Length: 338
Image (cartoon, rainbow, N blue to C red; front, side, top):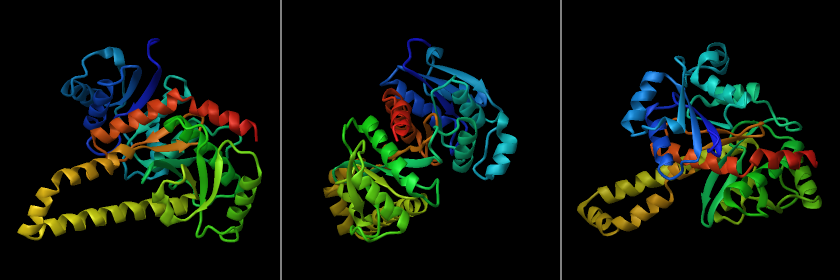
């Protein structure tokens, strides 16, 4: 395995249609990048069938670690911890703890993944809690948005740390040396927002940062792309995410209904087919798959439970970028300099 850049642990049993979608996602990745080795954790027989099905014949790029147990999405976090020590998720996370893998990807139970990762991999010294970061499309490209739901409340330290951490994540993924960071608020005026937010704003405005501080950003400005990293508490972030997903789904369904309503609509759709195809490709949520649990001693990537093979492929691409950019080393360097 010395010829490989990094080793990624894969929980092959998490989410819908696994292990097929997971193995197909790996096969798509291997077609364009053969420098990552995969430790695949899951039930050996179904995994082997999927490997054969999707044409991964060379064992030089992977190793199967048999795990007969899997954590179900319906399991509570407490139950997952009780029964999960022999599961594909637990073993994959444990391999990162034991330095057998550099990063883990799972489509499984989000709460269990977060808690077990925190239990085994531990937090970076000086960081209180992990956040979930995600990619957010906008008019100019892509922003990073955090926290998407790991923490209901943020204190001043969390705002400051995750501004730094989010900036380093953006630098690694998008190769930009001085990203802009903003705090999500109910207005752009300095007097608006709760006390922790206002205190964080003042400190970020007056201290030396590893980024360019934009100030506040409102919810209706996220789409503009004027800011690279948007920081908020997990309660607000998760509502923003679910609202955006629901709105996008509503608009998509309304457009479909309008065009399918009569012959004229169907004709207009046919005339505009390639335009709509381009729009669909640009806004394809699969390209943004992969929530990043950040603040831990190793990156943990949460693929959407309902993601298909292409979406899982994009989560592997994201993981490779994070590893090759030495994200954890960069974060630790910034935290140590606080």
